[in-house]
Amino acid sequence: MSDAGITPVDFAQYYPNSAIPRLLLDNGAEADPFVYSSLGMVGRVREALIADPELTNKYSETGDTLLLRACATDRLAMVKCLVSSGADVGLASKENRYTSLHRAAMHGNGELVRLLLEEGAGVNARCAEGYTALYYAKGNVHEGAAIVLRENGGTE
Image (cartoon, rainbow, N blue to C red):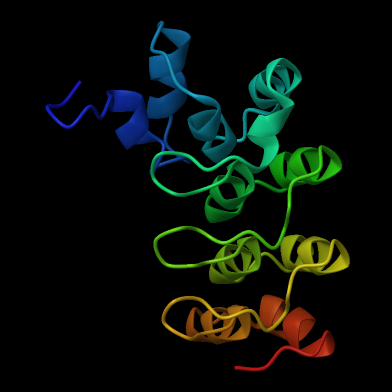
């Protein structure tokens, strides 16, 4: 653990397509449900939600919800689990006010964008910088996500 309290798993979650996070967890490292959400570990998040249903829309110490973490790492199965558990698709991160839709658009996952819109995500919600999800989809050259956003009334 670092002086700031950051564990190797905390750091490794930001590289979710790497084998390192699971290797650490498989060898006894501990993590919280927010890390499990980032890594797409649906079973572990379900267990945590059964133990504490309030966790569904609770903010982490870094200002994210489980849903925001799942969208930030493009975890469609995790998003479906969280939405079915009552996750609020309109909540925004504390720091930059990104919504789950902003984060899905950044990754360009049209299916995830469509799911969030069907669940009531605000297509033209603005983050702290004043940008919508369409701005990020276009800026990251994710035309599929941009099309879904435009079809649902998205503007920049």
